[in-house]
Image (cartoon, rainbow, N blue to C red):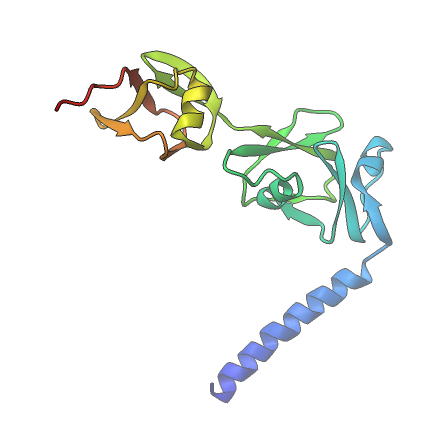
Length: 188
């Protein structure tokens, strides 16, 4: 790398260090409890860590911002089913936080965070059914859809029936069409 490139990289590092120094100088408390501040109508002060409530459990978070994905991880919601994250305010409706969006823990009025299953609609045997989005084994999907385990489950994809093997998996996003039928006998 030439000296101009090194100087530019040094300026970037110096700027990052200066921003970090300003943030550290602004710290007022070691641990800020956002629920406590909300309940008492107080602003959340700059802190080394923030005490947040996610699904009735308290956690400490080292930054003033947290993403929807990080909140799902704190709530142990990182399995094969899909969950949504909501930011709850003392006075107002909960707001959906997308997975990659950041919630500001110092935002006035933020009280807690909750997760909920992401529900989607699918069709099974010409009937609408609401289920949780996510990845299912075919046998688990049959159970959730109320399909007898002895029946075959097909997914209709672009007008064609695709048989789903019982030991296979299906990623449900919403809008899928499933059809169940009796197994066809083997010819000899």
